[in-house]
Amino acid sequence: MTTERTAIVYVRLSSHRGEADPSTSPERQEAACRAYAAAKGWHVIDVVRDLDVSGSDKGLRLDRPGLHAIRDRWADVDVVIFAKLDRLARNVIDFRAFADEAEQHGAALVSVAESLDLTTPSGRFVATILAAFAEMEAATIAARVADGIDGVRRAGRFAGGNVPYGYRTAANPDGPGRVLVPDPDESAVVRQLVATVLDGGSLYAAAQDLNARGIRPRRAKEWSIQSVRQLLVGDAILGRVVHRGDVLRGDDGLPVVAWTPLVTVDEAMRLRAALAPKPAGERRRRAARLASGLLRCSGCDAPLRVGVNGAGVPTYRCATRSSGRLCPSPVSVNADAVDDLLTAELLATVGRFEVVDVITSAPEVAGLAEVEEAIRATAARMADPSADVPALVERLTALRARREELAAQPAAPTTTAVPSGETFAERWARVDVDGRRALLADAIAAVVVRPGVRGRRGVDASRLRIDWREGGGDAD
Image 1 (spheres, rainbow, N blue to C red):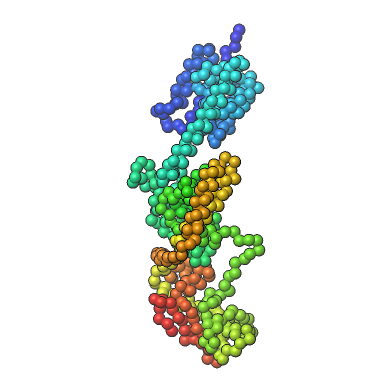
Image 2 (cartoon, rainbow, N blue to C red):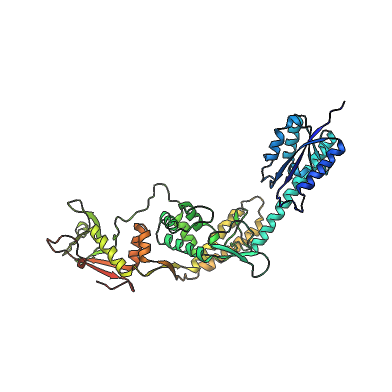
C-alpha cells in the first residue's frame, strides 16, 4: 500500500496590495499549487504565506517567517510546492541551499510553472539553470532601476526617498514627476544654523536652541550635535544629489545642482572647515569673561585684561604696567559687576530689536573652491580600474584651465543680511557665553572704563562709556 504524500504550499509576494492584486496574487499561486497537488494525488496539509516579503539579496533571503514555519514541519511534509521558482529564491546560492536542506530532511521541492520535480537529477539540473536566469533577471531589473533613478536625478527631478531637511516636494513645472523646492520654515532654520556656526556658535548650543523652541528634525525626536553637523556639512543644502555613494557630476566634472541651494559653496566650505574634527591635542581657546576684548582703559586706551585682586575677586584691569609701559591713570573694576551692567545696558537699549545675521561671501572664491573640489574628485576617479582615463584626462585639463581663469579674477565679497526672527533679548536668553559675546560685539564697538571714586563701593554706571555701533544706541 502506497502512503499518500503530504505537501505544504508556499506562497510569497514582495508587495501585497490586497485580494485584488493584479500581479501574481497569493490566491492564484495557491490555486495553481493545489491543482498540481491534486493531479499528483498529494494531500495539502498547510499553506504558508510570506506576504510583503522580498526574496532578493536585499531582503530576508532564506530568513523569512514562512520558510521558518516550513522548517519547523520537516518531519510532517514530503513535498514543498510553490507556483514559480522565483517565489522560493532569487539567486542560485539560496535556491541550492534550501533544496539541499529539504533533501536532508527527506522532502522534495516542486515548482509548478516549470514542472520541476527536484527528486530527479534532471529536475535538479534544470532548476539550477532556471535559478541562474532568475538571478540574472533580478540583477538586470536592479541595474535598470538604478539607471532610471540616475536619469531622473540628472534631469533635476526628485527620485523618491527621504526628503532632505530644508526642502519639500512639489510638482515639476517643466514636465512629469516631482522636484524639491525650499521649505519656507525649514530653510529659515538652516540659514539660522549657518549664521550661528559661522559666527562662532557651538553645535551644542544650536541643537539645544532648536529643541527648546520645539523645532524637530524629520526622523528623530530631537536634534543632537551629530544631526546638526550632518545637516550643515551634507551635500543636500548645496542642492546636490548623492547617487551610488558619490555626488552626481556633469560631463565637466562639476557637481550637478539639482535643486535650489540653501547655502553658497563658499559658506559650505567655511562650514566644513569650522566643523572639521580638530587634531588631537588642539583645544579651542575660550574667552574668560563676557566683556573680554571690549573694555579699554580711559588712561591709556589699552585693553583691560582679566585678573584677580588681592581679595580673590575677578577684575578687569589695565595691564600696561605688566608690559613695561606707564599708564597715567590705570583702572581696575569688578568683572562680575561690569558684566551685569553691560547686560542690562544692552537689553535696555537694543533688546526689543530683531537680530539681523550678516553673512559675507565671495562668489568668485566660491567658484574656485567648487572647481578645486571637482579636480580632486576627477583625480580620484582615475585610480578606478574601470575608469575611462582619456575622458577623465580631458575633463581634468578643462578644470585646470577653469581654475586658472577663476584665480586670475578678483574676489568680490558680497554681504547678505538675514533676519533671524528673534529679538536681541530672546537670543540672549538662549545662547551660551560665546553667543552673548557675539551679540555684544555686534552692538558695541568698545567700552571705555573710567577710574573709580576712592571709597565708593560697587561699580557706578557712569564709569562706563559705551561706544555703540551705528544704529545700536546712544553713546555714554
